[in-house]
Length: 111
Image (cartoon, rainbow, N blue to C red; front, side, top):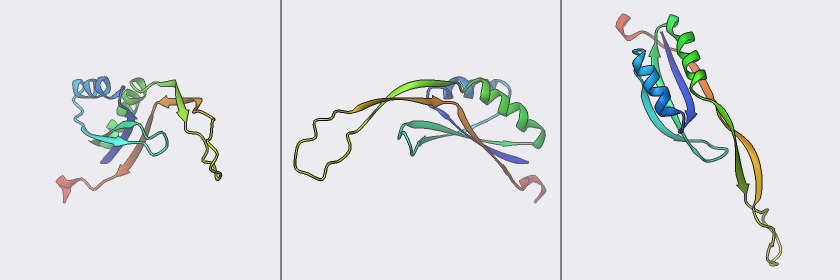
């Protein structure tokens, strides 16, 4: 038995959860925030039999596309008291996709 943790972009989560539910995979959904871009993510928890893991990973990959997004970086702090006239700098970053962790768990039915 496995515990699958999938971190996906908030925009991808509703369709992904619907697809998983239609295929009889039930999901626990957690609202999370990424540490790098500080944007909202959705973390999904699924308890799966070993033979279900590969199929669920494929469903997640199909519903969690990568895309480009413009982020604005704050100006660098200045040690002087002079006003820093540099405004935010636009940076093109890739967002979306998914991060999947698969953890072994003890099957509670056998304990």
